[in-house]
Image (cartoon, rainbow, N blue to C red; front, side, top):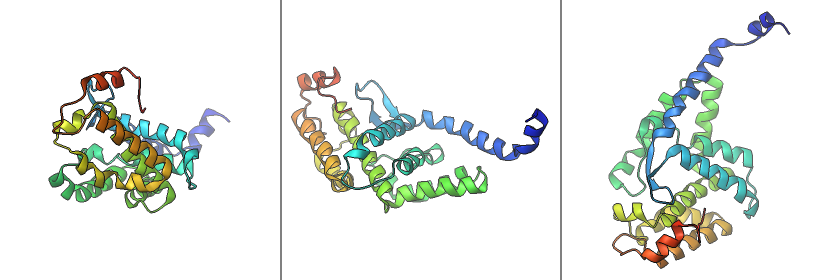
Length: 224
C-alpha cells in the first residue's frame, strides 16, 4: 500500500480526537488520593491506584468463586476514576464531599467523554457507568478490588491516612462491606488486612505499634 493510499484510508479527524483524549489523560497521573504508598513516603495518585487494581485483577481473577471476564474487568478498572480529571478525588470518609459526588462525577463524565468520537464516547461512558452500578460480575469484581487495593495501602502504610483523617475501624466497615461480600477469596484478604491493622494499632486514636510497622515497611509481611 502506498503512502497516498494510506492517507486516503484513515480518518484523521477521528484519530486527532482520540489522540487529544489520550494526551488529556496525562492529567490522571497528577491527581492525588488520600492513601499513601506502602512506605508512607507520599500520597498515591489515581494512575498508580488504577494500575495496581489492574494487576490485582490479573492475579486474582482465577481465585474467584464466580466467572468474570478479565478483559471487560480491565476495561472497567481503567476508566473507573477517569472522571476525577475534572471532578477531583472524593475521599471515602468525607461525608460532605460524598453528598455531591454523583453530580460532580456525572458532569465530569459528560465533559470528558464527549471529546471522543461518538462510538468511543458511548463505549467508555458505558464502562464507567457499569462500574458505578456494580450489577455485572465484572463490575462486582472491579469494585471489590477498588476497595481491597485502597484498604491494603492503608494497612501496609501503617494507617497513616486513617490517623490523619480520624478514621476508626468501625467507620471502615460500611466501606468494606461490598468487598467482604463479593467473594470468599477477597473476604480472606480483607480480613487479613483487618487483623494486621489491629495488631499494628493503625486506626485513628491508637498509638501505632512502631516495631510492627517498621517490619511491615521493610517488606516482612507485605500484602502487596
